Every structure is written in C-alpha cells, then in structure tokens.
Length: 155
Figure (cartoon, rainbow, N blue to C red):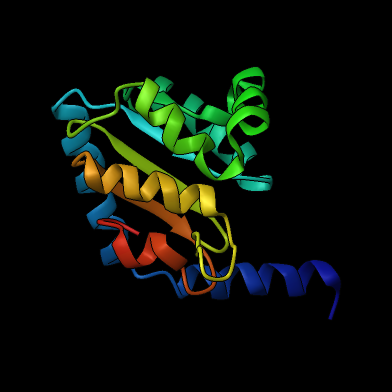
C-alpha cells in the first residue's frame, strides 16, 4: 500500500472516530458565546500555537467572534516567560485581558495539560483562571485530554 493511500485511510478512520454529538455541543457553546458578546481566547503551544493563530483568523472573519491568541504577541509572551515563568504566561495574559464570565478559552493541545506529569502547566493555570472567573472551557485535545478534558465544557 502506498504512503498516500495509508495516510488517507488513517484520516478516514480518525474522522469516523469523532463523536459528532460532542461537535454539536461545541457548536452550541460557540453560538452562545457569540450571542452574549463574549471573547474567545485560543491557547496552545508548539504546533498547536500555530493552529490557534489560524483559528483566531477564522473565528473573527468567518464566525464573527472576537478572538485572540496570546502566542501571537511574541514580545509579551517572552517577557512574561522571562520575568514570571512559563507556567503563568497564559493565566496572566487572561487576567490583564480582564477575561471573565462572558468569555471562553479554547485549548488546542495533544496532552491537554497535566501538572503532575509536567505537561503544559501553563494550560492548567489558564484552566484554573477560567474556572475561578466563570469562563467556559472548550478544546480539541489528543491522548487522554488531560485537565482540558476533565474540566472542559465542550471538548
């Protein structure tokens, strides 16, 4: 079997494994967010940061939702990392953005954040900020989904 054929088979199998009811829940969450005039903060690191940046474009342009990704502001991100540490980069960004109950975070991550295993502790801190401030939590995660899957409203 060719590499291309094998790849397309894997894509099809992955798509078949997606629970469409979970997508419907996410669509409803996003619709309510837009209706209440909330903002959507995309959070991810590595390749997921690039996906977040692209998602901001689509959600602003196509869905009409005010959206941001802290990783798009490299100057602030690196200053916060240098001065305060990596773990609080996203939660501090949410705080200065005055993110609150009208708003939501959308995490894109393979691991979803797990402090015990030192997987994206910055995502866990952001989730804790979101919970404390009444924000909704959404995400697209892999593996076991970590803290995002455990505490998210639409994952």
